[in-house]
Length: 116
Length: 115
Image 1 (cartoon, rainbow over the protein chains, first blue to last red):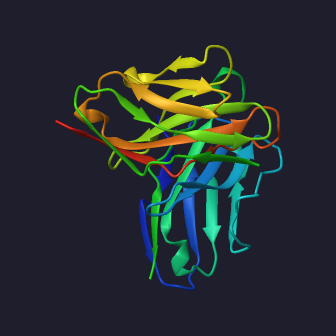
Image 2 (cartoon, rainbow over the protein chains, first blue to last red):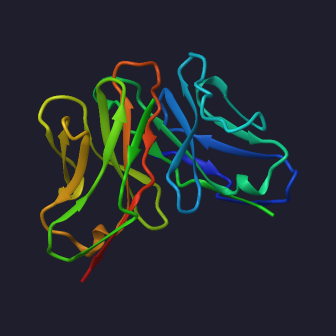
């Protein structure tokens, strides 16, 4: 597709359940980012993938959160044993790496997670 | 460490008037600075960036921003606001020379342009 695609767009789950959120980046983009946007707050960095390098996981809030990127393309963010404070919009972005394109991220429309 | 502050939760301006959305940053090193915009029910979109060179950078939709190193600021401006500019604006920073490639975003400023 032409843009970053995220699924599901909305997810309602019960506390304690596991959830998986998917991101399909723009073809050819080597960098992929996950951010979290909570109501009334800014974007919180979660994790960053760049090519075959080890991901930057420094933003993951706890060991219940993990992400992988298979084949340098699609990424899945997994939240285990969800808590109510995990409720947020999870945003994925992709970009070309470096050079004149530095910092120009293309965002998906997000996956809204509600934990009851 | 790197951080961004957007001191105003909301900015109100009348259509046709100039607008300013404020941003200050804190980094150890030289910064890359960015503005992104989030329209209602839409994803974030890149607006403009400062990498190096001229302190005044121009971006999409008539927006511009001025990098001020001494004041560590990167305020977003537009000479004449439109109602359609009403949206949520985010400032972001990345340090130029370190391994951390992810952008750090501010908390956002909601711009409301009244007709």
